[in-house]
Image 1 (spheres, rainbow over the protein chains, first blue to last red):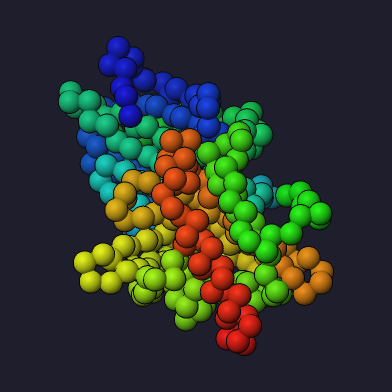
Image 2: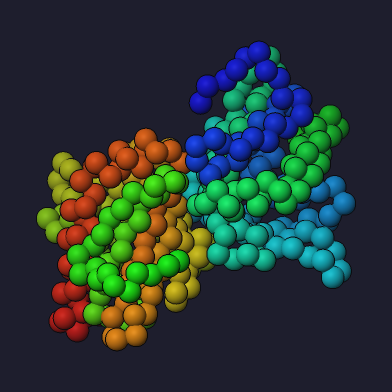
Length: 165
Length: 165
């Protein structure tokens, strides 16, 4: 991974890869890598930031270890959506997991998260979501996913600011 | 998935996808979809066919269910290789799992297996392995992986012929 040190990602950058059917997200946090790792592995914390701000998250399973699995729902009466996957790798510097929205059970993305220490009390989160076709990748980009991404990362900022994380 | 009914895959066809960093394998078996599903989910059977014929397989874990995980080693004294992953989806018609050779722990492929009933007592196995770069995909194609594929599928043919499967 190459880092353009001239760039700052106060807001999440969401980019379509030009050569493979992947989405790349970059976002800076006033956090250590350890704090971002905990935000992604502790189910009590995940529940408090994941997804769009107007949707209630309920964690059914969040077994963040190599070979563990996860599932959560969001929304409320009449509009509950479910997501699930397994954790392939859970290391302090790297999480690899699968991701499916249960409304489209055959669609599976492979997600890779890395936590890059910027050396000044900030950490850059890099998230890659790999799909098996450009059609699926582009449909996901058009789905409004940036709302969940931006709301979720803003909620992590608040957890950091109020000392919860 | 489109099927070219003029084609028969008595030998495995191993193909590089032209547009995404995936490998596609197609292979016909004198088997039902249920038999091929069992060959991939029952660890006692997996042990008897997986990989190159001259390497002994030992299964450490084969928990073939949504969210389960797997690990096996092959080889013998001084040359033991380990492989591991998690099962994202395990259905009679479809298995989705992650795959890592532990010698390169950050390399993760997403594998999708489907069992296509050809309607004449034969079933076509379709296996897709998705990598996150063309470099990794092409290195894998050059690794000699066809030996394990062809030996393994010939071993499934024998398990079918001798009634083990």
